[in-house]
Length: 131
Image (cartoon, rainbow, N blue to C red; front, side, top):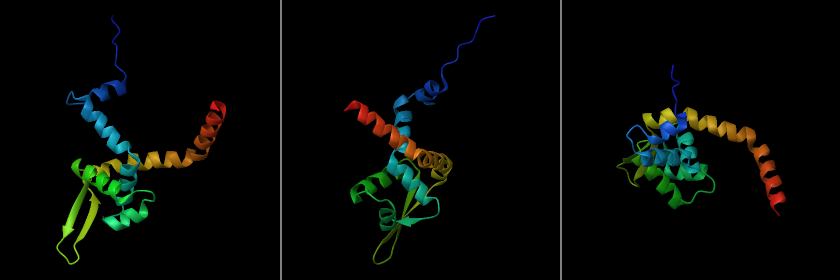
């Protein structure tokens, strides 16, 4: 009886269902980006205006916020709605596809929160040993 060899699960996924590994890698880069993850997590509770998102996301520049929201919109994770008001009002909300990502985003955020002290200590130890 011959033994079947299975490729590692991540390797198979990296090839992508469309046979285009670049698309798969770009998706991982998008959903793994710190700003994208934070924005999707913040939009889970409902639509937000640009200024609200900027105030909630400390450290992000207006340019980076705009760029990240556009990329999330392009990927279908966030939608932008413009209201015909004076002054104009724009709101961003998470789509159904983006909503399906929220459990993973929250799981990673919870993991990061639980291990922040340990990782910070490891970094300090590593940097001290490198000096």
